[in-house]
Length: 188
Image (tube, rainbow, N blue to C red; front, side):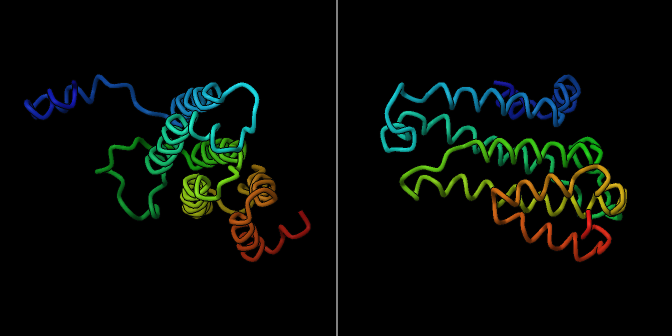
């Protein structure tokens, strides 16, 4: 309804935008938690939770959850570098650690999703995970540019990445790259 109002009266867009609450990583995670709960509640009682019947029951909620993960991951993706201007962006400035925390929570959510018996049903989750891994890489570059490697390691981010790498191979190359860049982390 608001979209159609703005389409009919574009001059109202700035006023409406000023009234809408700003999206934060915390509010996005609260929304994702609701989507995850709806997904879990859609499962049938008993039976094979990874089978075709279960998938058919949860498919709509599963797709909504993964779509929301993609949307919020894109929304909170950091700028390519500090030198690029973010003044035209509608995304509010968010600290690099907040973005990493958001991505850590989203990654944990993806880890909690089961693997389906039918590999085709896993493609959407794998695609979402690949997008999240790309966002991690961009966020880490930005964090290092703003705060440096010592703050990254002392903040526990390398440990979190290693935990994710234990569950998802795509994180392994990120961990190896950080260790290569900061050789002093090898004994960490």
